[in-house]
Length: 250
Length: 289
Ligand SMILES: Nc1ncnc2c1ncn2[C@@H]1O[C@H](COP(=O)(O)OP(=O)(O)OP(=O)(O)O)[C@@H](O)[C@H]1O
Ligand SMILES: [Mg+2]
Image (cartoon, rainbow over all chains, first blue to last red; front, side):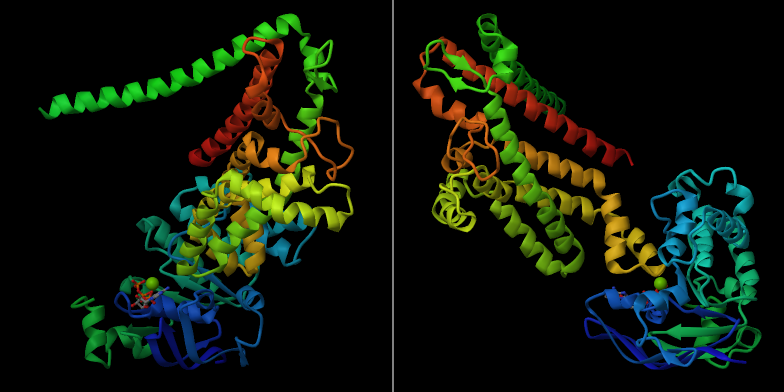
């Protein structure tokens, strides 16, 4: 088992207020790691620290290190880092262009593809991997803003797959979706595990137990417990974890 | 009782609205009638394409081509300066600085709009005109270029404020989405932010141009007031607005000259009307999205 990401003593601050305190955690190659925890426990902050989205916020500062494949993520450019670590947000974030353009936008800019035939192939493969191809194959040239929320979210997955990252971060990807779309997104996540390493933040404890290999429980900016999903859900070591997953608080 | 107040307020608002429409129609028909009388005695093509504006010669010449060229040159120059500067300023205010700095900068820019045009003309006369004369080595600093620079200052507050609003209202999800795909901040601004905000920015530009075309005092003070067709922007020009403002006081009411000035007014009115109309089209497009 190889560590894909290693977080070493990471602390995060907004306006000098400590949001995450001395985290040590590793993400194993080709696993799905779920992060659960009540609101404001710092889950999103942690995820955004991994691909340095937080660095855009002027009030944000951090201490500690994050390593990707053994190298510090602060030694490579943000653009390269985000190409290697893709991120999916809670709200679907399609760009205001056609479905087709949404997918080729980043690969074209990065110079991964140029020929029209390559683009077509890439769009098809990405949409198939995100289980969206059948629904949109006849309307690739229509605006992405006209799709349903679930379709938009899967388009965003397809868009990430098109730049072929190594890690994908999901931040509550199903919070705005109906149960059927949720199942579809979960299915594509499990399929993606073969090729990618996945970190999933979810408010839905059941979802964590359905899809993930390991689960972390965050509370007030600290890790309370981490373990394989089976163990954590069946016999949690900490009282707080047990209370949370049985729905007694949070 | 509440019902009565409601009806009264409704009536007042309605009559205010109707009144402003009526005023516009009145102004337009007034301009139109005077111009129509003028065009009965003076050929309209000669009016628009004539190169010479000699209202006092015998026979009087009322060609406004040089004035149209003058207005056009000054406006074009002002746009070339104001548009890029305004868009970059708006991007900077909206995307780069922190929120508190943004508020300060924005109110400063809005304050710029409150400077009276006489003051802008005055500053141009004292500061810019001598500089232009020395820098470009021309006989006089009272040139179309000087007018453009000062008018750019006047157009910028409108352009900056409205385009900043447009840029700021681009949903942050678009930006995050693009950034998370590995786009640089600059690429995100150019490809996503500017593209999404384009209708609003176009409207801002149009409204700024509208202000420049109609501006009178500044151009009268610093463009030299020479009604010849210029060969470059470093020559004096005369604009339509300056002619009306300068000559209206000297004419005999009802004379040809008097009516000719109204016809220039009509041309100006049509131009600004067109610009505002185009701006509205862009703004409307923005809302429908
Ligand atoms: N941009 C920001 N500026 C200032 N404070 C922030 C910012 N983002 C998050 N915080 C603070 O950091 C803490 C952790 O927030 P975070 O969004 O990471 O929580 P979360 O676990 O993702 O919660 P949720 O389940 O509601 O999404 C909160 O107290 C929040 O107020
Ligand atoms: Mg969150």
